Length: 108
Length: 238
Image (cartoon, rainbow over all chains, first blue to last red; front, side, top):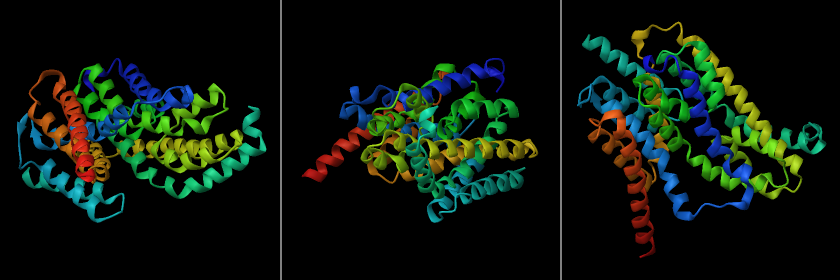
């Protein structure tokens, strides 16, 4: 948090605008404007690219260095495995947090 | 306020609520996890609920938390939120016809409340129906129900997180949530290419200042996804 302690509400408002404006865009403008199909296709890939760009460095790097054997990566594997084999929405969180805390305990 | 008490609005609202109710249960774990994650990066309960009310978007909230925690530059936080929300441009364009004949006020309210689940529930019915009051009711009832569930269960998460020790790394819940969101997307080939390219680029460029690697990853991922899409459709035609 530190860096944004004083300005956190401004940050929330900007993130809120970056959410409400895309959502309201065409609903408010109506059918007067349409998106070209290339743009529509490009936009489809933005969420997947952004999610991966946030998550992958978080589980592969430890203080900026590649660390293929770190507890977070094992926990990520467990969470993904749980999501693939079960439809239970809680299981990925239980499996991931369980492995993370278990390994941290074990390595401590 | 007359539109909200018209018989058409009420009938639409009842039907929309009934159609959405079973689906809405899926929001609960997300709201709980989002509440816990916000406290996990060090927000006070008031800040966490403030963010929850102002932003009202699980993916954008969870996605920006690690950046806020790391003190990433503001423009990058906003750009990331935009990238995560770009799908709403498409949803908004696809459902816009459903608001024909309605005034600007209800349109802004509806826009603010647009979520993936409500979009999926409402888009077809709203195209087919003539009565504009009915359409607005059919859309707003599930939207307001989503809002209430989202705020209520996020609050439960925020309060529960307060009694969990810091050493439990609750912030990792956000990472798990983002991965779970990514999995169904990655089942389509071009989407998987976009994700793999975005993730790898972000790792390789992680040494860049200001978390620019994330930004580069988003752009590289979109480019790779488009290229894969292009080959994919070409291959299908040949």
